[in-house]
Length: 307
Image (cartoon, rainbow, N blue to C red; front, side, top):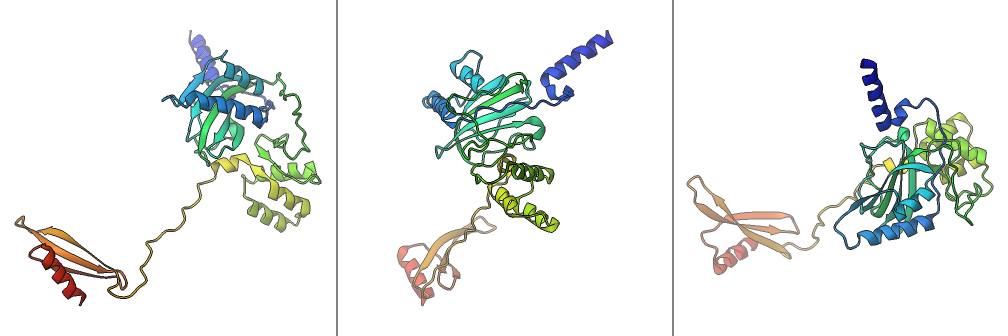
């Protein structure tokens, strides 16, 4: 009876966390990187939420958008969620998945597609660096027997500078969006592997390490300049705010004067008016006790202090 209970608990744990009992590695296929198709789906998502107070929607299998996403994502989908103006990435707890991805339509009408393995995630609920207007989140299990499908007329070519395909053989989303055609594939793979092995170091650190080792050259520098790491882009901190300060008035003494009346209460509970006068040019502040706040009296006091 105890063994039966333990086996049942193991099945439940395996269903909730499949990668915990995974004893082999599977190189999964990647979603179709066709921005036009994803942009069309994101436009439909935006139209669905434009006149609704609901901000999120979980699609059920059989929905038209669900079927289109299932055709573009060569995984075993476990959840597809639509969101309007999301702030952070999603990390559901009550479904089984080992990979997640998202198609994002930003406020500036640019579109981005991201996917990652749970074993490579360091910040599960990382905020988006650019404001997002509409998003499609998909969570799934890898299907090693299902090949990646590419739409007709849009065959993926590793030498195509517009393909934005990750470096093959690496479990991360390092891409070279616009590399020169003369840049060898071996150099791109070596630089990407070095970037991962050094803990996603920045380009300055990688250049310093290569220079100290004496193995830096032109193609390596070109690969470093064109490399884009999706994990580093998603986990980088927000930029520091620009310094701001109150502008100081430049002028003559008495040219710009500000004054106000404040009331101070003594121990007996009686309130006493106090006139404060500030001259912005020398940053001089004068305060004086007054008996009345009549305009004629206040004007005389201010004129006497200014003189």
